[in-house]
Length: 274
Picture 1 (cartoon, rainbow, N blue to C red):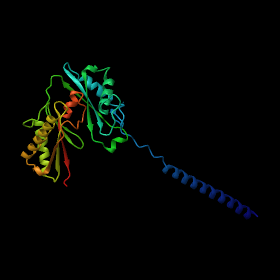
Picture 2: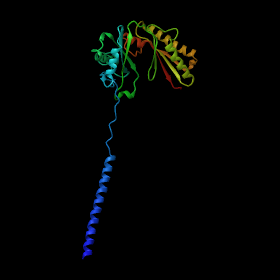
Picture 3: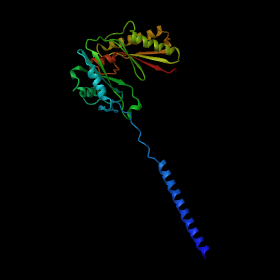
Picture 4: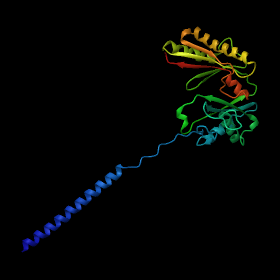
């Protein structure tokens, strides 16, 4: 009888221990499964000190805007003006009252800076960019600032964009020789073309001042000038496509002097070999 009681006690203890182990194992498994089934974090959206959204003139200010504002105020002199250039893409519609989305964006920034920089010290300009799919979602930068001396003379300048290079010319100028900035860029471009099978497309443009026929001829002279400089640097003429459009394809509004300056240009695009 004694041995029977001891056997029953041992069986009860063993059964209780087994159930406890099973429960702990199950709970450990549940905890482990829950730990690896984490909710994915939201995809972060890149923001900029001043940014915009597609087809919208609203300017959004974020971390870093105050530093830009303070820098612009510090750079204000006795005889200079702040040029605000609003950028826009080809298929963005111009808001009511504006000739382009770019001017609407520049106007927004002028008004935001008005408490710190008098509006009569600010000039507005716009610049058209080619459409890209990446900017149609999220946020992007679309404004530039530059203090310019009020008595500064126009010079030829080189603007390098993502898919093209723009060489801007002073009013009514086709230039007889490249200035150092332009010559340096064309020298770099010529060396690149000599090492690849790429082609170059050269397109001349003007603003809308003067007769249309005269502007067409001037844009031709500008395009041919750039082509001739590249030929002197060793680029074969059959590697270059040349065209001219006069005043017919502005990238900026001709309503402002800054816009007209932007339109007096030659565009260069590097193309893959056919």
